[in-house]
Length: 177
Image 1: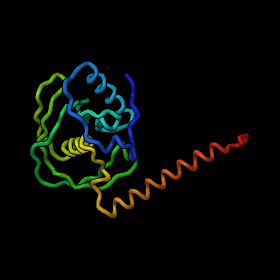
Image 2 (image 1 turned 90 degrees about the horizontal axis):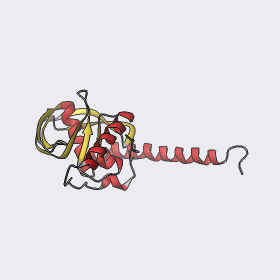
Image 3 (image 1 turned 60 degrees about the vertical axis):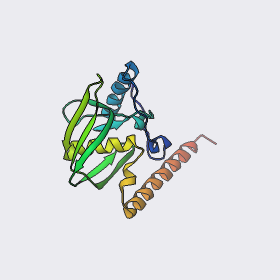
Image 4 (image 1 turned 30 degrees about the horizontal axis):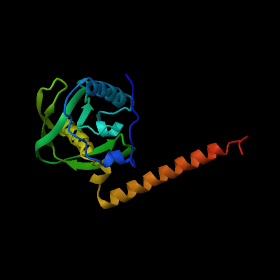
């Protein structure tokens, strides 16, 4: 199995709606296997296909019961509110308190083509909602209020400048022109 590079904020693939999976074939199963390995290596509890540059409506997750995959998921009901500090592998190292529905009813398919119907609350429900956001081209940053987003963008710009400065200093290392 191979791990993918996780796409991060700024990559346009993260802002696009993923296409439905027409057929679960050997290539989709292999993609899921590689995504699970990538998720564990990150480490994370969920990973959507667009986060590895694949525009397909599927995600993998593991909240402690072993890895699972859901193909063509959708939430058809939700209820309540629940605040929780949420992070994202595509915006590494940053966390915000996000309000989402407390319970959701998710439907989709497993890798054998069986229909899934899952009632999920609190943490598992949040994982489902977060990964579905990725499938719709929504990043965690899009869920922030104006002040939070402004601060997040400041931090992300600062990180980008630090990386540029590091790259420049490496180019000017002793012995290099």
